[in-house]
Length: 209
Image (tube, rainbow, N blue to C red):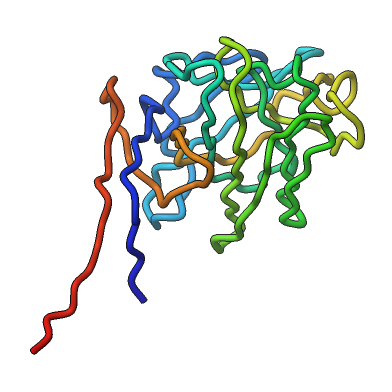
């Protein structure tokens, strides 16, 4: 088949391939090019928790999203030792949101009281695309957390979001995309373009002949 993207989109995540030198971390480390991505190329990163008792996450440090604007955030993730990730920052917790993704069973979960929409797509070989659409309410950077359990309440606190790390467990990640709009479009690679990388709207015509 052929996929036609009917509207233009811009990926404003500065580095869509997660890189140690470009992302802030808390309670975690990033190992570049340590796993085979959905592309079949060894360009995915491993996020590994340290032994701290607290958050284990990385942040998109150049996010320029505007409060009050609706964005769709997506990332490809694959279970290593940890099988749950969550999204944070951008006012999510203050708005009572709890977006989590179960990489064992392919389940997207929002136990929050807000209006964030979550979805998950199995793309093969253990990889899932985790997606959330949300009207940004805060200026904190977008964050991807490791969780040690699936939190069945909102907002997430204590066990799950914050826990004692073991220094070796983690997940594989690749392909961060942040785009204005109500859905996730197909992946747009951004290797450092601060204004974002645009994919123009596509259309097909069939000649009458």
